[in-house]
Length: 335
Image (tube, rainbow, N blue to C red; front, side, top):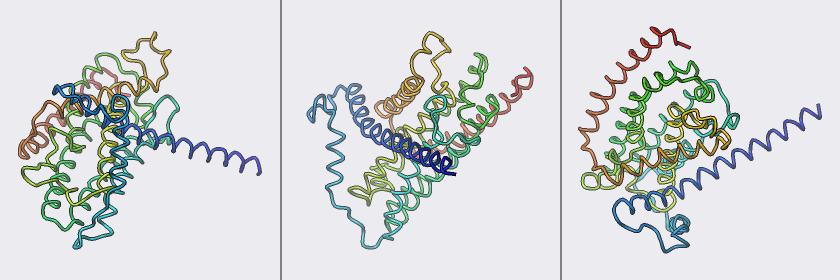
């Protein structure tokens, strides 16, 4: 019995250590993603970006964090105080708990559950609640309008994302994220999934409310969106949640379409590089697409956004589920 309790205690200590590493890594990545975004946009638009706080401006994210910590949190007098404060906490917490099932390398996962992809889809869908809570609790027409626009946008593109994931699951034959990465995927199958990769890449831009689909923050139309009444650390939690979701969606894209921690193109000579390095590089590549889109593309109108989601992506992904399943059945490649 003592050995059992000792082993349980050791397992618990390692679990908490692993959780701490994940949370700390995500928070540091979020901080320096903001730095990378400003540098990439500066390079594309012939500006400098952060360059004065610390060497090469590397301490700018820390300075921004200290500034937000030092500001006063102002709560509107007519707001629902409890819901007002819970909304940013919920969004930030959801952006962290989803990492529990993300495999960084073979065996490097906190919870290796058989329905990992369903867990991710459920957690990402719950983000709508935080957005609606923030808009409603602010007791502001502008914030509420921004919340409704954001919620309808997120729900619209989650439908297409679900059908895209169905295509991947048909090819992999498993809901476990590690098995999805390790499932054999010949060149013809990758070509079959490539249109879904492109649609998924566009959909995660809309899912995370990023440019050119950042309609909830249309300043010329509805001021600052659902977080317009927030300040200081409450606003910082929304900010952290948004960028953590960007990293999460990039990691999911890497797992579903880019081979996760496996070396690119199956080149065995590159297998000596640790898998977590490949995972990080592939995730950074998808994040670069986020930054590239923001620096170069104009904002869509709201009707264009809805038309793209419901009249283009939804019929196309439905058709492609039939194409993928029919092709796999005809070739006898169903898992």
